[in-house]
Length: 364
Image (cartoon, rainbow, N blue to C red):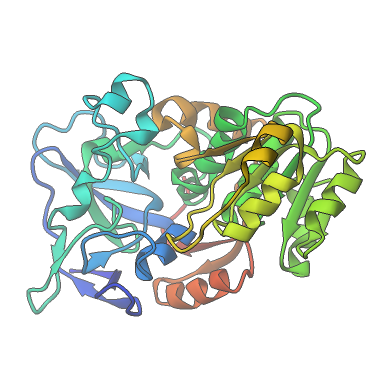
């Protein structure tokens, strides 16, 4: 029996309690969690914006230590530090065949399996495959990657989603070039990773936009050269900060129609907008045909930062070891398992950066 935070039903509050977690079967790995990040995607699962089988143990951004392995597991052994990969690629579908592993059609197939049981026998599913909001979890072997040397185990949790997504949005999707101006909408966990990644890419002006004035210092610490408080005149302010033309690149980390539209309007003629935020089906964004022609801008969606974790984790590790990427600075709240509902409330209210659930395990 281990303690976990689980979602009884879509639209209900998260519940913390004991679950009966089985030993790993063939091809599976049991992990003692060191830390788990509280991501906006977890909140989207609770309110139905994203759908998964429920009841489910949530949490998809985590790192920990291998406790035991099932038959046939060869890539890790007990005692190894690992990062959880919530979207493992199958290697067989059309997307994987094209090298677009972040679009793998089978990546979330494991979310429907039986993960654990409540003491009363209720079946629990593993949320986005990895069920990281728990003291321990059991995952498929392809859901774990070795923690890179020199990266503290607790901090490594952020590599599982926020950092891969933010770094990939800059380097793989928007493909920010040296000296380009970048505007980032939303200074949460992913937004902070985007700001640091824009700096790594050698961007010139890096403008952060958020609804909260309290995010100003946090944004500057992450690499923003300017901070704009979101308002009806945001696009106009960004054009004024970029010589009257608009930014070369806008990266939207909120997932709201108005923010996406503002991000697009904030770029120059021929500019590029990358949408990272996950919005609901009610968030409709509209454009007229003439403006699409006239402005010549590009608008693109971005899943998991267009990242391949196997390829990108070693690159991120090198940036961390060189001091170019600071994981700890992204964390504004270090909490316990029972504090996740309040972390959801703070996130929904636009407060803080990344909240990190720490399970008391010593760092790597």
